[in-house]
Length: 615
Image 1: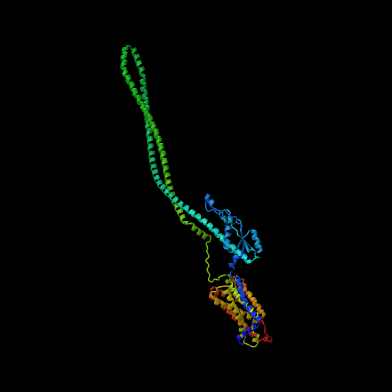
Image 2: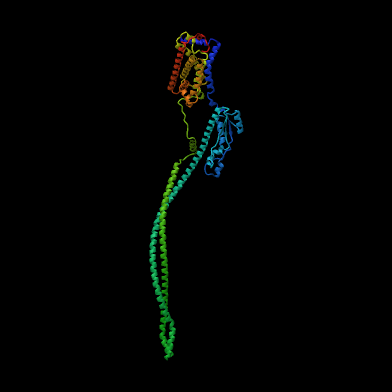
């Protein structure tokens, strides 16, 4: 009997009754139903997140607006309190990421407990106060409270954690942007003030330069003054010395004149007495009165001249005394002049020293103000000029400096498409496993009739392989038409699915040939092992070491990888390597089954001729 005849005989056996046809159709539909229904249910769960009920509790009491600079009455009136909690709540509800339901804290706790919501998010009373606390003396972080209930759904807890993290990032960006804009506004004000300071420093530098130039002229003048006053002091000292000598000489002259005047005055004062003495003496000599008068008349001109000479002498003595007094005053004045000139010379010298210090100090001041002006100008250049729009962009950049640019070498269109390779491969194994519940692995009558073991093996494999191809074709139709998944290489993807089904048929055939019903059970165990080692959901690198080792051995992981490469537009070389590994499994399993069939030819019994519904 040839292989086609054996396949036809097996198909006639499977369709010999109405229940047989129903059973065959049902088993052929197993992978279609399994893969199709599961992927349909999980085609795009993220799009359904807006239907997930979440309680939102907003207890934020708000806070005063953060200060943006020196407070004035106008700014104090313009600054309104902020309530970041209300803003966050509005953004969440408008964003429609979940079915946000505003509740009180008590209502949210009851709803979470009875499963009306999957998790709760609470914005506490001090939320705004904490967000604005960085500007005060008690900075602390704001809190967003998440409460979950794994008894409702564990993944909902994970979703809540991710949602709160996104809220945290969004709030941090919003508050950071506002804080950065306030900082940039302050820097802009600082720059404006620095520009004014540069103007003032320029004027100060000009004034300092002018003062420095004047101080140089002043120092020159005080130097000349000091030299002149020194000469004046020397001359005044010489004058005082000469005046003192003149005063001393005049004093001596005055003394002599006083003595001479005194003598002349005494002589003048003695004339009347002398006249009387002469009169008496002449009388005693017996002269007559006429004779006496004649003598006295002769003496009167002498007396007159003596009195006139006394007058002249007294006038001269007075003038000499005046001269002596004047020269004494002159000497005293000259002495005072010499003392004052000396003091003036000392003061002029001190003034000259001070003017020199002032000149040096003003020169240093001029240099310092020039450095101040240049430094302020550099400060202005270091702070770029900005506009409100530019500051807003700068603040957004500071608050969120990193923008993620995402690109994909190969891309799955949604969550369901991402799972499709894994569940399609698993469906292929389940479909073949279910077929072997009614398909005979090997025709024992053919073995007993001494047909070729190789042909018997091929016939036993081709029957489920062809039925498996029908399964894969139906599943491909469900994925492409019903679920609308797109395929970068649809023919290649279908080819991988058919090869995978054929390989699985060879593996389960070998197990049945060698171990019978035990082999069928091991096929179930292999399915479980491949379910966890294929890397269909999480990366295989996350597996424990023993299971990760099985990933590199068992065939399901290679089927998943090949489908991904062909379905998403990945590396065709990788898909070729995966198909090569499947070919090794296919050929190896068929060879092992053929060896088992050959062994059967040496252990034939009459019982092998009895037909059986399950091979």
